[in-house]
Amino acid sequence: MREEEPEKKPEGFRLLWILDVQNTPCSRDAVLHGAGGSVAAGLLHFLATSRVRRSFDVGFAGFMLTTLGSWFYCRMNNAKLRVQQRMIKDGIHNKVMYEGTGLDPTKKPAAETPAGPS
Image (cartoon, rainbow, N blue to C red; front, side, top):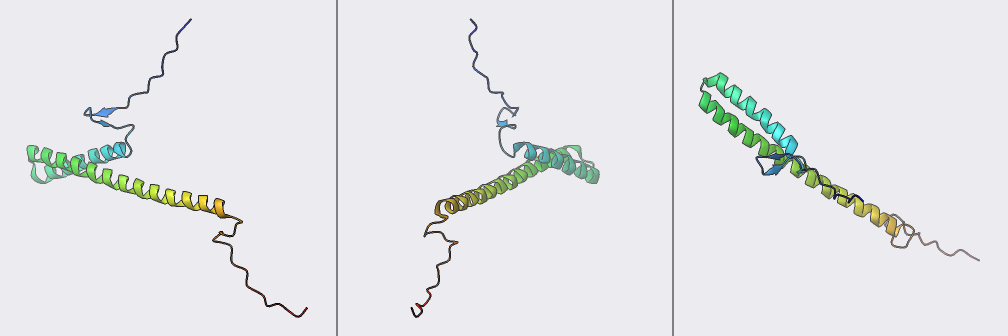
């Protein structure tokens, strides 16, 4: 008889053994934007000044700033989206719960009609 082996979770790619790029939200896009920002900043600085070491430093600073800026922007948008989804979910839940009852907020109270001569 063959023993069943427990399934292994595939390990994601770890950037600098710290950041799991595949499983952390927004990390992949942030790193890619940072790489583009570093190349652009370093190359533009090198073309303007022809100083290699300083251009590398500017490129590295561009990577850090672009990565962090992209990361925070993405995380804030995700947080805003989660809040909107929670509000919609609660609204749908309340609609289903109170539909057809006296507590239904969409149900307009019936206007009282005066009793006519009988």
